[in-house]
Length: 501
Image 1: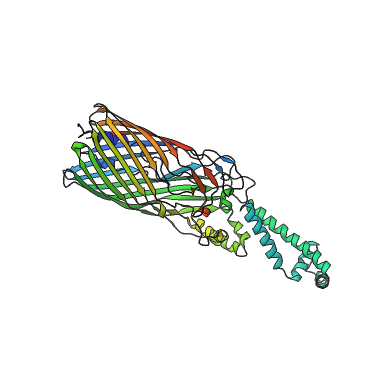
Image 2: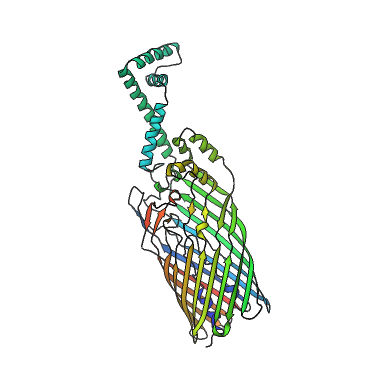
């Protein structure tokens, strides 16, 4: 069937754009196919994504404006070297960027600040205003009400004459219903004016600009393999991973968090991987399963919330709570998820192989709650039935991805493949910072080998992105959402260079 060497060409051709747009923050797909190449091998590549993610305000949003394309283009490189140190021992270094996000909202919608934004939605804000006015007024004694009334009339209560007038007016207030009603009305109007001024001042502290997110990770995997026979390969190794990012929340969708900024300083963490592979080169059969562990990152997050002082509107201890949050210090733990990759290929006819990749990522147990973000969420959580607070980002489901395809060697220099892919997404509704729910895609790859030891591979994939309802962190775990994203797509393409030696 001429398949003994065909596996080398076709595996290389399938890799560009693998996993380039997947659920949650998944990017590279974390392939180890380079490590499973025979003899000594090196490759370097780059993948690019051009998404279109548009939607419309919906759900709890008080308007129904269109939302323009919020998915930014991005690219990420990869590289790998595999060395056969001895007949039964191999070593590999693999570099990729496994997880990330790159998005920004624009235009006039609930994810972009404007002068009409308020700390809370109109219904919630009206309820707090009424409650604050009533509780403030009810807490005033008769003497305080009369004193406030006289002060509004420019009476100086620090003088003897002022105190005498206070006593006289208080006596009339207690004895005459009409006087009491008039004074109460005036005092209540004064309380209303002060509350409204406080709300206006709080609204003026909201952020300016647009919601945007950028998260980048880098992985360096060091793998050792042992081949007891030509058919089996067991391997394991350590993984060093870095993470950094920036998040800005803006617009009416985020209420009190309109003006929240978080900068995640680049931090490293370590994990591990292990797997096994089986192959029969004569029929181009190869199967492998690889497990990657979680990786913990204890990061310093530089957080700011311009509207933090608005907590004073929520009760008598609000100002103290805001001060305590502003002074809070500590690290935030971000744990990137564990995953399993299953790869399979086999010859099906002369010069032709079928291949498949299955991937599971444990996004259901993933969340991000920066320190101050979490403390604010606890302070306001009681208003929305979440007294323990909520996360900046979380996902409700694990991610499952499947890719199947066929590759063919056309001649000694050219090979190609076609593929179909599916991704389950990580739950719906999903975070506003990545509002798509899985995908279907079709892909085309081609490889040119100018010499037996070198190749250039390219690939392109078109994605039909799954419709998604987007929800804020405060809405996670409920059916509430603030926007609906439908009929979106993405185009991905990649290039790879390889050398066998």
